[in-house]
Structure formats: structure tokens, C-alpha cells
Length: 296
Ligand SMILES: Nc1nc2c(ncn2[C@@H]2O[C@H](COP(=O)(O)OP(=O)(O)OP(=O)(O)O)[C@@H](O)[C@H]2O)c(=O)[nH]1
Ligand SMILES: [Mg+2]
Image 1 (cartoon, protein in one colour):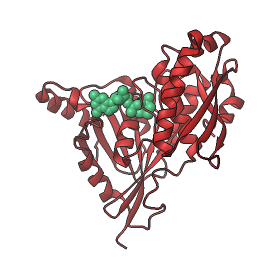
Image 2: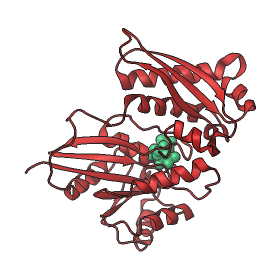
Image 3: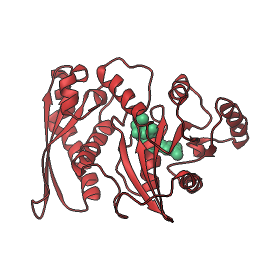
């Protein structure tokens, strides 16, 4: 057989650039990116196909220390569950930094049987390259990594080399997906993520972490415009006003940015309607988390 097929988990602490790398590798935006920790809450799968190889990348939520709410604990568990049944793991860190949370990730990877590669991301931020070498030596003493890749996910530096090495670890097998598929997850799920990405961008402090998106209507048959209705859940009455903003301005901004992202993903015109609703302390409600599909 001359095709290869396998799965690769991308793991690491929050905000190191895992989702950015996956989107870059598959050449399509399926995972939300924001300059805030805990942007990703679910394992998001993106499919790469090229050079006779198909790889299902699993972009995991950042493994973090302060697991106060049920939501936090659930997303940590979700990340760890992705480490099973994969053919390789990319552990991502930020080049030049090592934190307690990186140590925590390393602990979670201690018993992983497959090869673990280290991706030291954001090298574009390192001004003095000679410091990187000493730092890399220090980091690689912490575990016997199958490969070490200083890279930049935003600029695409060294990412092709990482991909090539990963390809070598994929078993000879038939492909499981069509060549042009970029994710095996329902489009409405990806759409909810793209809407939430805008919440991460426009809201500040604790608010992004107290919001969740539920798609209420997603009618692909509606022509010519795809109609999407979504509820934005917040966990306190006071947050509702902040999300909506003065004269509804914040919500309007979120809505129009989200629509642009949805149109790019769906490759068609979208009409987006958003509602804001309160579910008191939903981050600690098993029932509500389940209804949002978090943690299954
Ligand atoms: N300078 C620089 N910034 C980057 C690079 N890769 C990602 N970023 C930025 O880092 C921030 C976090 O990126 P994400 O991809 O959302 O990080 P993540 O690891 O998925 O974060 P969580 O989902 O919260 O765990 C974003 O602002 C990205 O634009 C890089 O190579 N260089
Ligand atoms: Mg992410």
C-alpha cells in the first residue's frame, strides 16, 4: 500500500498557538484562535491530505492549572482524552519560555506510548537567536522527544519540516476521508466555534470565559442565503448587558465579524441572528455543559 493514514494530537498549555498551527497545516480555518488562554474548549479535528498521506490533527484545549469550574475540569479531561489512540503527539510550547503548566502537560504525556515531538512556537518573537539554542537544550533534557521543531505557526517557518516528520510516523493504510475534506465534525459545530472566536476577541476579562454558543437554527437548504440562529449564553444577568453593549453595539460588532468568518467557512452568504440568554452559573452545570456538547 502506498498511502498512509494516521492521527496526531496537538497538546500544550493555553495560548501557545495549537489552533493556529492546525489551521495552518490543513490550510483552512476550522479552529478558533484568540490571544486569550482557553480559547479552545473541545477537541477540534482538522484533516490534512497531501503527498500520499492523510493526517487527522486533533487540536486540543490548553491543559491548565487553575481548574476551578466544572467547565475547566471538563476541558482538561477533554484534552487528555485526545492523547489516546493517536499515532503521534505534538507538544507545543512557546519558544524561550517554560512554565509550570508546561510541566503539567509533560506529566500528562509521561505515559503516552507513541512518539512525542516538541514544537517550540513563536520563534518570530525571539530577537536573539543564540539564546534559543541554550533554552532548547534545557527543554530537551526534560524528555526524550522524537523530534524538535522551533517554528512559527503564523509565518509558516519550519512547519513543512514538522509535517514531513509526522508523515513518516503515520502507518501504511487507506485514507478514511475524501481528499477535499478539512474536518469530520459537523459544520454547525465549527460555525459555533467561529462565532465564539468573536466573543473571545470582543469581550474582556472574565466575560469570554462565561459565554457559550449554541446553534439553534442552521438551515443549509435555505437559499440563496444560509440562515443561522445562535444563542449566546452568559452566566449572570449583569453580563448580558455588557455583551449587548450600549445601543446593542457590542453584539452588532460580534455579529458582523462572525458573519464574515462564517461566510468564508461556508463559502456562501450567511444571515446570522444572535440572542443573548442567561443560565445562572452554567460553567458548573453538568446538564448545561452536556447540552453545549462540552465533554460528552
Ligand atoms: N508571534 C506569534 N504569535 C502566534 C504564533 N502562533 C500563534 N500565535 C498567536 O498566539 C495566540 C494564541 O493562539 P491560539 O492558536 O489560539 O493558541 P492555542 O494554543 O490554541 O490556545 P488555547 O486554545 O487557548 O489553548 C494568538 O493571538 C495567535 O495569533 C506565532 O508563530 N507567532
Ligand atoms: Mg486553541
